[in-house]
Structure formats: structure tokens, C-alpha cells
Image (cartoon, rainbow, N blue to C red; front, side, top):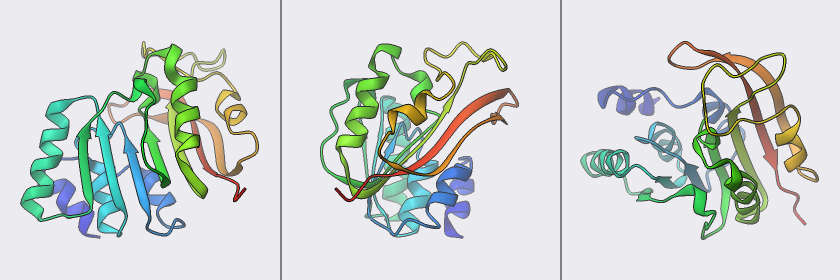
Length: 190
């Protein structure tokens, strides 16, 4: 797969495993990579034919992604600086991916961000979320501003088809073990 080459060529981690899996069942469409950092997921999706809007609040990360897009001649990624906390998406998306991003947001804004994601997902479209949890069984060892409680993410997607949902312990790229809520949900066709 070409993306591994691009990502490794620029010193980026491979695309998130959940993004890779989701792209096996989701047809290329307009996609939003929320909290894209340097673009590891956006680059993967673009290589598969998705038209990707990649947003992050870090101008340095967005500039690096823009440089990669320019150097590689990629024409299906639009990278822009955006504060996800604002919950002011524009456009409609067939896939919104938000992997290991929500835990860095202002906790008081997470519900609005999720509502905004749902509002800007096309009927039949998908939301992919991976976020740290903090539960009695698995207290979060990292002081993230936001973590989900048990069942909280599932409850936010009442009425959507949950293609995947779990709350399992996983390992972050830095080796920290923590519990994650992982969900791929499909919006009803109305």
C-alpha cells in the first residue's frame, strides 16, 4: 500500500488501525479527519480515493501536511487549521474520523463537538471515534482534559447503527496502557 511509503518517507506513524479497518468497508467519499496532526490518517484515506478535509489546531502540523501534499502532488487533501472545540463544521461528510482527539478537547465542548459531527454526517455516512476512557476498573494514567465514562460514547449514538463498539484496554504508541472507547457508527438513511 502506497500510504505506508508516504508515511514512513516523512517520518509519520502508519495510519491508525481503526481507520485502516474502516476504510475496508467504507466506499471512498468526502471524509473529515478531525485532529489530523501531521496527516497520517488523511494520507492513508487520500491514497484510497477519499476526498479528505484534514483539520487540526496545530499550525505546524497543518503546515507539515500541506508540505507533504505539495511535494507528493496530492490533490484530494485540504488541510486547514481549525479549533475543533468550536464545533462549527461546514460541509457534509460520508466519513468523519476522530481518533485519539477528543481527549485533548475542552471537556465542556465534547457533547457539542459530537452533535456537530453527527449533524454534518450524510445519511448513511459514518463516524469513527477512538478516545481514552477513565473508569473505576481502569483509571486513566494520563491526565487528559477529557475521557469517556463507561457507555458514554455508545449513549451519544442512540439511533445509529453501531458496526463496531468496544471499551477495551489498549496501548498507546508511547507504551501507556489505557482503556479506549472505540466506535464505528453508521447514520440512519432517514
